[in-house]
Length: 297
Image 1 (cartoon, helix red, strand yellow):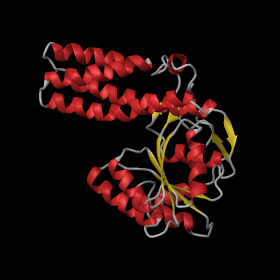
Image 2 (image 1 turned 90 degrees about the vertical axis):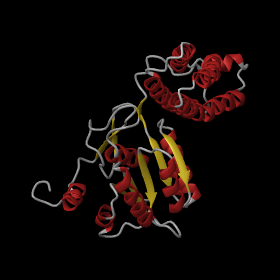
Image 3 (image 1 turned 90 degrees about the horizontal axis):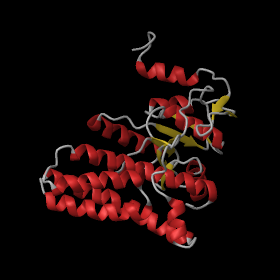
């Protein structure tokens, strides 16, 4: 209960209140013209990279949404069906979902209902921004009543989409700026590979693909108090981190390597949490560099 209204009615009333017609560019903190005025100027966080799930059955619309978001440094997974959206949200961590309402079989309403049911077990709210081609009266209220956090009509203005994500997910994500130290040295790697950008892409992608698996292996080694396994994992990750100039990950691996050699894993869990954050920083940085020049270097 808030302001004398039940929570659901309060949320609908807040969504219907007129806003000032502007949105904020989250990368530059400059005001953008936004016809729907999703976010008042100055309220959007600056320089975040969110993990975004885009559920859209139209291939062109999905590709456009993914590219718009990737160019802003967000890390995006695109799926074609509501069923795939629920499966992705169950197996991965996202900061926000962009959900088309009119998907076949499992539509956006049904997918949202399943996600909200999952939240009753996890206790973690996943913001959902609805997309629809039908701007009919009462649609916004229906979306909010169904558990969605915001609503956009197609074709979507990129500024409105960015602003809606900032409004729906005001916290979370990985800060992009200021980066006191880039999490990997892409320039050095590119020079090593004689400006072969395709190979640079492959090396970075392989590093990011393997890191989460290696992180899980190290967590298991710590749980099992298996110093030899932890040292072996740390040695492998250390080599890859050194090749890519991933200074933060390299320092963590050196600490873990020393700890495992001394057969002392006290504090290893905290270091592995830091490594998980470093993986997110690397992925966000690579996405941002791709958006700048169409490639990582």
